[in-house]
Image (cartoon, rainbow, N blue to C red):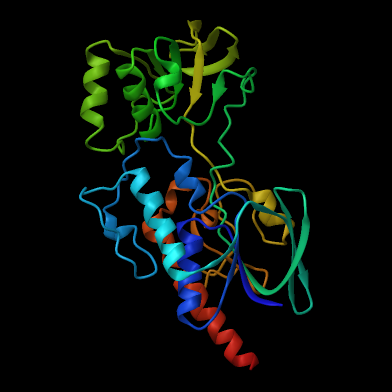
Length: 328
């Protein structure tokens, strides 16, 4: 019987593990990919908004010569934390179900090789992030092979026509990288203006590229359908138009997996409201089941960042330690 199992080994899961470790526990982490997989899925050249000290966890300094670290530096940092803390991590093992039992929980999981496992634990922390569940456009053709909700790097799109759907950081970043490798880029966004929260060192570059005609920007425009060689859109006048393209990047954001939480008994309806949990302890309406990181957010996954979600583990560890002392 484990004392506590953490599902997910991203920054917030690792932070929770460190906080629990500092209070004398030896948590088990189960991760369906590898450490910090959500950061691994970021664009290759992505630079963080946050300064390195705001990304630090477990008392391990984040050393970098850059005022704001890059993706590859964060991957090294979080791997280093896991190694220095000697966390128990079962990598490439997917949790398929969490069932409430009289004395805790039964966690069902499956390894990459297909081996099914069962783990008993007194408590569970869900720190699963959100990168597996993109916000879908909900239009015909969204599942065609040339459509992606992920952007890694620009090289595969060099010399092609690309429609980027979205108006926030990810869309602006992708559009600029694509333009630099010679792609013909059209950004389609339903709003009247792109997001005011685009990184301040990116926004002037994006605006300049648009003003100089290197990137086409279509505002107040909705995607109606995606076809193999073009995108059907409706502009502000309501008129239907077609934009020729070879690829579509739907940079529409991501959302936590509410169905996974509901299957555990958590009150987590789809919509704007976040799952039910106590903000002082991060414990859900299911006793002994906690949330850490962005999985605790509402409809807007950007409500919780690493710099705030990293403190969820402290609340969890303090509450769990008190609970264990009472039971002793």
